[in-house]
Each structure stands twice: as C-alpha cells, then as structure tokens.
Length: 508
Image (tube, rainbow, N blue to C red; front, side):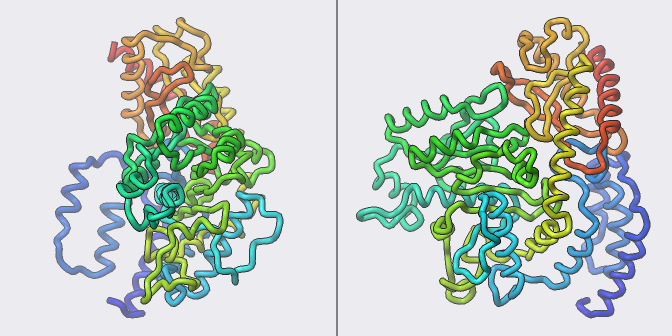
C-alpha cells in the first residue's frame, strides 16, 4: 500500500482520468441519494484503484462547479493551472512546518513569503528582511477565521498583561485578569459587517460573544467613527476594557471598506489594539489604482489575509501579519522535544501545531502571477462589479442598498407591484411596510432557493441592515472568477427577473 509501484499505478490512473474532461456536476441527485451511496460502500478494504473508481463515479459528478463563470455566490472559484501539480508535490514531500527538523528549507520559504506580504501591507521600503533573523513578520494559519482568532488572542494577552502581583491572563486566566485589572468587561468593537469569526474568537478566548459590539455604519457600509468614539467614552465610564477594535477591509456581505485611517487615529490616541480583517480585500493592495481604498491598513497592529479568496490558492492558506515584531511573542509557546525556545521553529507561534507547507502555494502565486497579475485581476473584478451595478440600476427591477466599494455586491428583486413606491432603489431609500418587506423577503428567498448553480447562475443570500436601518433579505454576488464576463451576469439577471415574476404571482 505504501510502495512506489502502487503510487505509480495510481498516478497513471489519475493522469488518464484527469486528462479527460471531468463530468459536469448534475442536480439530479439529492441528499438522500448521497446518503444511500455513501452508506452503501462496504466498510472493508478495497484497492486504491477501486476506491478512485467509486469517487469518480459517485462523488465527482455531484460536486459544486465553483470554477463555473456563472458561480458568483461565494468567495471560492477555480484555481490557476499551477496549483494541481504543486499539490501533488506537497503531498509527496509531506513537510511539516511546525519544526525545522520536519521541514528544513520550507521553514525559510514560509518566512520569506510572509516577509513579502508584510512589505505589501505595511509598506516596508526596504527589500524583504533577511531570513536569518530571530523574529517573524506573521504566521500561516488554515484560514481567515483562525487568523482573526489568533490576532485577538494576541490582543487579549496584551490588554490583560502582567502587572504587580499578576503574571498575565495567559498564565492566570480570565477571572483573575478581570479581578486584578478591575474591569467589568473586555470588549471587542467593530461594525455591523464584522465577520462572524470575531464572535467565535470572543467565545474561544473567554470574553463572551455578547462583548463583541457591532456598531452602526454609514451609507457606505463603513463603521461610523462617531459611534466608535461614543462607545469608547461609555466603556471608560463603565470601567470596561477595550481588547481590540476591528476594521473591515472588504466585508463579506457588501465588500465595504472601513475608514481605516480614521480608526487608526482613534486607536493610536486611546492606545488600543487595532486589527484589520482584510481576508477579502487585502490583495487590493497590489493595485496602485485601488490601493488608496485601504489607506491606514499599514498602521494596524495585525492584518488578516485569506489566501483562498483573492490570492487564488487552495483552501487552508490563511495569513496573519503583525505590524510590530514583538507582538507574536505574546502568544509564543515552546516545548523541549519539538519547538524549543529561540529556535527557527515556526510552531512556536499560533494555535496550530503540525501544519502542511501551504506557503508554497502563496510563494508560487507571488512569483507566477506577480504583482502585475494580481493588480490586473483586482482591477478587472472591481470594474466588472461596477458594470454589474449599472445593469442593476438600469433594470428598474432590483434594489441595491450600497454602492460597491470592491467586487462584492448585494441586491434584491422588487416585485412589480411595489416598484412604484420609489425610484431610489440604488440608495436603499425605499421605505416599505413590514408586510411588504416580508413579501419581498419571501420572493428573494424563493428566488435564491430555486437557482441551478450549474447552468443559470448562482448567487448566495444574506440578511443585512440597509443604510436606512432596515433589515432585509438580499442576494449576494461575489466577482472574482477570471472567467466571469458581464454577459454571464446579464443572462443571470434576466433569468432572475423571469423567475421573480413567476414567484411574486405564486406567493401573492
């Protein structure tokens, strides 16, 4: 089973099957069918080729075609051609970057990759720092969620650090920290569009999800600075402690970018940890044209970027970058047998231990696509989003609550009998009654549920606040697939319009 002969046989099998066009996904099967198929496979040893036959016959045809140009509902699309060969290489080498003894050169490749991304985000004028230095610019994680958690872990330990008769929260725990620091609560502040991973982090870190405060946004979907200042004032008054303020650089629902410069000013004045969740929008920094949208990100204490989004590498490639070299030390852990203190071992930092050498994907993308390639992709997709936005406005059928900042756009279908109420769909100013909004929501939910992602286009669905403070169901479009053209989006809108007209009659 572990021999070279078996590997050669399987590689030949895969070369033959992958050399042909993989069968298109089908929508015929149901979850009941999947369950019967999977439960019907005997739990006994079979040959690797038999197993791969099963996968190609019963699994592959029923996947989601994320590479389709009409699949514009989520932050996942097809991968560049160089990724598949690299995956086979990585699996064959099976390097573990927890420790230099199990990764050797891959330890330094990861450090070099992080250093280059650090220069992109924080504007380092010098070339990437020499690898033979003791500190790190950041850490790799399995995704944006873990990167956000790690950033707030660092912020929490810094906020409740050691003082007289107290060794720090990392040693004595949450209860002792609150007692010694004489605080009622530890708060994390951000906009209504903060990613839900922030609440996960607060739960995990013992702060509690209720202590993540989602503050109001302005008409551009940005955190209101006046609301932030008022909340900070009240926190001081109530003897609460601010663990961190989270700025959003590309919200998952609207693509909005907070006023990072303004937040940085406030955090600097108040001495508060400033984290930027740029899981989606970070790669905008490659574009000289749109880089100013993220002005102020270079002043953050930490920044999250998720590689599987707009860096076009496989899922499981998250990045957390630190603005100051001493910050990773607040979460550093070591062990005598594997990650010794003052070693090169990257496992000293972060929550995970053993990790694959996924930095190779990023290293490859930075060199194969390059700054120019990423800039082209970013600019193309923002322009495509603006063109799609114009199509929505001119239709007179769809309402768009926010002018797109990047390449994510939310909109909703307005039933024909309600379109007369306002001509200002594009600004989210329509004020429908509760009953009317419920009807609009029902139509859009049914519209979303009735999609066929393989042929006619697929968008996701969300429930968000409009600039007027209303909550409503919206369809969500994510534009990052290089294969997607305006014609695909126009065809999708026409289909949604047709289906919407049918649904509003059936639901009325």
